[in-house]
Image (cartoon, rainbow, N blue to C red; front, side):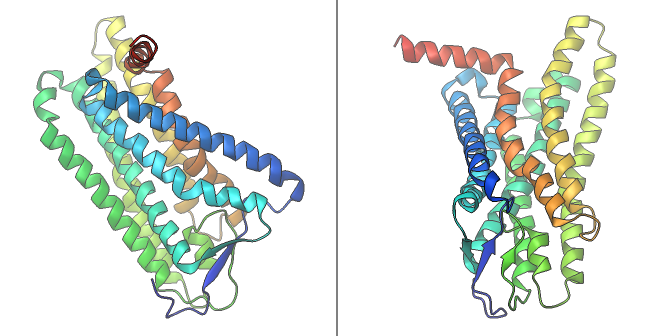
Length: 310
């Protein structure tokens, strides 16, 4: 990516805080978060890959969610950790645009993989007799292809919008990553069109999945209320609760940051909100699905037995 329209060749990431006393404690805190994220997501990916009884549509999407979270966290956290231990956390212009692209790609992909998972739960609970046909391997592959196509399209739109800006002198990005609004703040020219692009792309990236998820769970709830047995209701609710927790945390924090005008939300508030869907969500997802999922617990026990008693 050439810097033809900009005199800035590198940016300085301000990080999460400028208070010296907090730098080292925060470094170790977020390093622990990163290790938990890596172990949790790689563990879930490994369990699903090794256990044939988890080779179902539900776990196919969960496998890809963990893969997205793993890559997503790796795109953001290592550079964030550097801001706690270095005086100037410098990132080249091309590196900043690359981070922005992959950040947008993974965040939009996660939005749509969560909607695909909601659709899978809808078919499993509301139409169990046609589940195998409806969620065939071909359908799952097409849904996954759609997830990554939407992720790529969103990333291209956001990155292209930022690349078109001119950066003249100020290169201090008031954030721990190359995010959209902090970069818009540094532009020399008008950002009205760019902000409009952000709003439209984010509205589609969040709006379409939220509508899909809302309709899916409204139909699921209606179906659950018609189940006569208490055990059946409990099992159906248990299957969906984990997904609802993950969706609420991810979409709630994302919408709070991007679906409000930049003038209403300060960049410091935006940094704190961004932590929830960039750091906390990828860390909590595997924990939530593992602790609340009997199949995953069984698979873990079987895998550990195989390793302990070959």
